[in-house]
Amino acid sequence: MKRTQQQNKAIHKYLAMLSEALNDAGFSVMKVMRHDAEIPWSPENAKELLWRPIQEALLDKDSTTELDSDQVSKIYDVINRHLAEKTGVHVPFPDRFGPIENQKEEK
Image 1 (tube, one colour):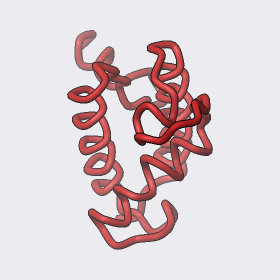
Image 2 (cartoon, rainbow, N blue to C red):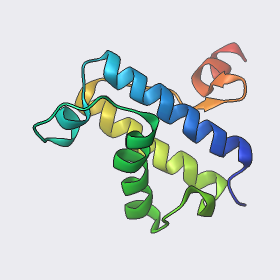
Image 3 (cartoon, one colour):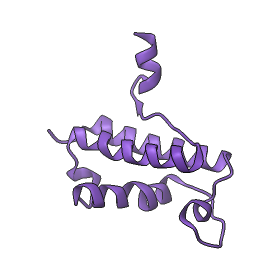
């Protein structure tokens, strides 16, 4: 099953939340990517530097429009695990009710 429009919105919301969390934690693009210039994170560079390379390496797909619903979670899991280990930054994946973790706690 193809990823839904809601999942697409959630991907972009996650990237915005992630870039804000990385900036707030003091991790510039270059600190995480190992270059010299310090560049603040944005949803756009989070997508191009984090999401897309993992998506291409893991699934050999260039665009989020090609993703199936379960593939979105696989990409998120790889990014989240890597960043949590490397930077201590963890951002839960959003859904229409808020972060998935909050939803599980409320049930």
